[in-house]
Length: 556
Image (cartoon, rainbow, N blue to C red; front, side):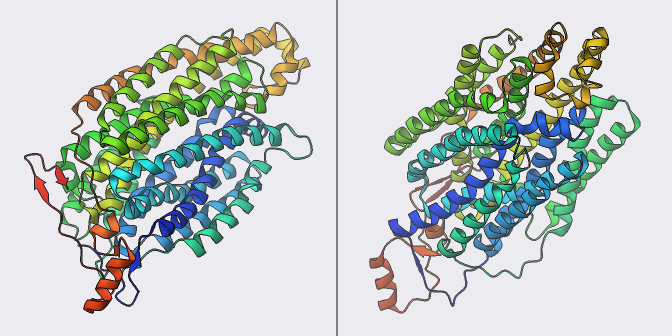
């Protein structure tokens, strides 16, 4: 049931100028979220050390990812029902306010809470940006916009670690400014969105799927917490078992609720579409196996290699180069011939090879070698992530673009959250044990250096520790991180198998808003409608739809 556009609003003409203006507003919002992630990655060791949360370091990333994951389906469905402009502005506002809270956080718990609130805004920015692009640009031409998006994330990957490292290392500023800098960026993004983001408003009298939202939130939260606590407290611990039981019950309840909902938050019909299911499964598997590696590598570099926060950020440059090279190359090729499956296969294979290579990391691995590893990871990401979303969007009707985008991203973020939780738990539990042994073996030297426990360990203390304590700490980090990468390999093998099973649906020729009858593509079409006395809501073109045996829909 598609909400109709506001009949009192004038028709929207998707001229190239209007598309570019709207796209600039989306870039401003995405820049804020992307910049925040890369800034925090290099300042995390200092933050958790000063706030006393080294052994719970994974929660900094898990809280953000969990909150992001929870709200993705909500933003996607509400955008389909009511329009995306207001939701996009709300997401920017949430992210900005949460940045202030994180900067002022007095302790580790408060900091984690505000990171979660940031995730509530970040999830909206991610989903709504992708859905709006699908609304205004046809699927085949969408590849044209992958380049600027890749360049933006590349810019943030370069600028974020550098700015974050500078602020963290500066005695006059400190890590808090990694969040204060979001405030002017957020205000600017909000103003750009307010004036430039002109999208149709919709009206819907369909009752909200409140029960579905609650059940989905319970399912996601219990799954992530069970995974996180299972690794730290034991898989047979009473709390872990209780959370696992809650996950099973809430998942069953969610399916039952969605089957009866008038407008389900996640339509179960999506999972009868083979192309959508395979693309979503790939995203989830890559999220499980990939993002955990990115989350903890800066910490490894700072502790094991003695790099400052700024210098560890510089090692993200090769990954940025890899993303830009492959996303630009694949975008140009897709624009020319409309073929995208080959890039998902190649991207997954490259990521798998890079992760296997990273199992060889030691405290003595050269920075040049680590840089090449990052370049390989970037190449894989540039080939797969945008194309998986493109495949999912293109496989569904235009009326479900927002829901399909959010569901695809939801499962990818579930994978990323679980990956970070499991990876982080395995890493930090091994790390706590290894660091405790290192400090006990050098107790007098540790006391002289002011290192009283693993929870208060910061990079500067490691550098000042002296030998043999410093080598013992470096070895503890290396021996804790590298073996954990082997746990990611089976997941990436699964993603590679799924990439071969992906069915390549011909890319749609009309933008989502045009296909839904909410816009026209030229002033000539608008003039013709006015001469004919048509209403503001433009009649939708009649797409040719072929439904095959697995419910894939080919739109031409």
